[in-house]
Length: 223
Image 1 (tube, rainbow, N blue to C red):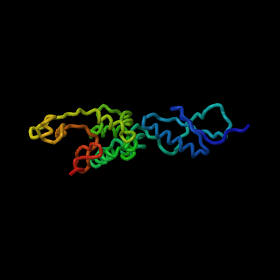
Image 2 (image 1 turned 180 degrees about the vertical axis):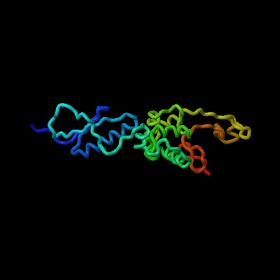
Image 3 (image 1 turned 90 degrees about the vertical axis):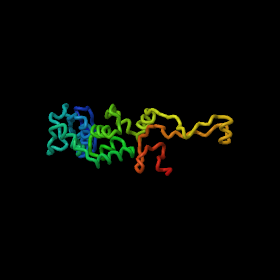
Image 4 (image 1 turned 45 degrees about the vertical axis):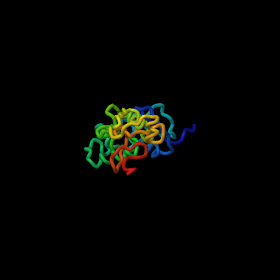
């Protein structure tokens, strides 16, 4: 009887499997699977099988560790630190500035975790602390809001804020439409009156003048 060639890995805990040509290849794939699920705190139970061996009718009785000589982390914190070296470390001012720069560059949550070597929960908590995310946004919601160059977050910030327009100052009296406007400006409709006290919501600030960026311009662009 001819048997299938190659190797197979199987995770009993997540009911997942993969195939490869060599044992080293399937160990590499299994390691990637374990690294992905370690963030959730769910341990994997891995098995490996050479498809060239005759079937025994039962899975191996003892799980095979891809790194038999490497000690398994004993705590949840240790397992997370395997993927994120700076998890639970104190944030300093320079790292806060680096996080702000990455946020203003519209990096997604995966890029920020890789850049800072911190888990998603730590990044989201710090963004809230810096006032860059609302307090009611959890990790799955933050992942969605920061995807695709912060598209959904920008829409949320744009339509969430209340516009407040104050009355024109006395130094700029309003000219009524009609003959008064025609006499003053040579046109029936008077020109728009500027509203210096117009309030708006903007997600980003200019790195030079520290004022809100509206569209693609800010105060220092016209100065």
